[in-house]
Image (cartoon, rainbow, N blue to C red; front, side):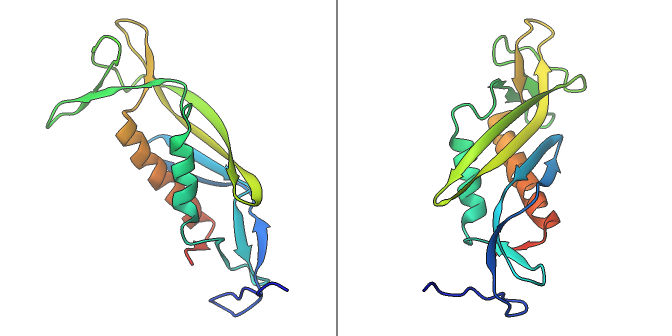
Length: 159
């Protein structure tokens, strides 16, 4: 017989439950996580299935070779930063952005897959027509903050 997990807030028994979709946004990057496994008690308190779960999920998402089907823009400038086309180096007009949508199914050891939807600005170069997204480092930071906002909105305790 397995060990009964207890809620750290009310000492109630916790069960594994997939959560309804949770969402977060940062600098125009929108992230939706559907089916996130969480431990939940009868009083509605939630916590991650493991303290490292959020970072494991993000690492898996970032290691996907097709995280976003577009190249990343280059970032130039020291004080006044600007995005530049990775193809021809022309400065991109970030005020005129389209959107790119990507869906990933993240397999998690012994649990049902988690669906992750990411939507972010896409920039088309006025000079050569090449389409790209924000620089990778910026996108990683935005993904981290968007996922943190999503977890906070669902009131999931870390441990």
